[in-house]
Length: 311
Figure 1 (cartoon, rainbow, N blue to C red):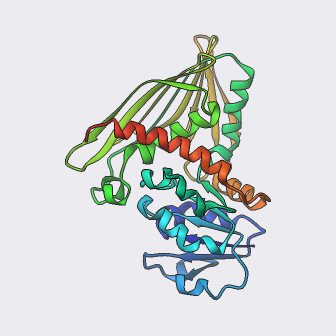
Figure 2 (tube, rainbow, N blue to C red; figure 1 turned 135 degrees about the vertical axis):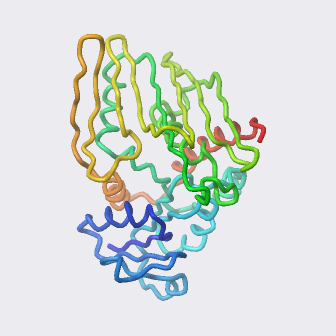
């Protein structure tokens, strides 16, 4: 199998390439990067460019797109004829109106296109689903916040896709919609903005499911690092640290606690990107319109929140 990566940023070098190198079925990895990289630093990965694409004889088994959010769809359109399977990093785009246009569906026809939600493929997330199926849950609370970054980081630049809800908020919102789909009623939300940067910086969302489960999500930048999920039932709080992103070589676990005990349950060390890539490579269906429909519902929700926020 052969895979193409488009985008040579830190995430590609730190997470994508190491995960792909663990998959025995992959024997060729190519990288198109706007950044200047040294081939000697890329192990078995071969530097590539767009002009070479026309010379490939067989399609890539998978193309991964990891760039600035503002460039994701443009890159996809440039490479869509060279594979039937794609994973695009979150957010799939910051050009929400363009993405939500029904005429836009044509570029995804007969292709399998996923947004990268690697955390959903980790065994820790399966424990979340098991708990929701096996216990009477009253409330879930999820937060993803990150500290202040260098001022030249793209997350502070609107034209490149800077947006807290699209960078951090998309994680807990994706979790909510995956667990409860459209069986939710949004009761309140707030997005706080930075007028100088012309971007949103933090926010929260409060909702309730049809079964009465309370949901509270929060996100933000320039805050204490939090990456967590809490599930409350009548007897205990179940706490999942590092639910979305995991440090390298991290041993995942979760905790059940109440007034009488605090017990840790170890899950183990897993590469959620490796698991996600292996799953998509094994897919036989190449019709992604169902996946695109789910993404459109999510981003219509996010767009509505942004449209009702004054920057």
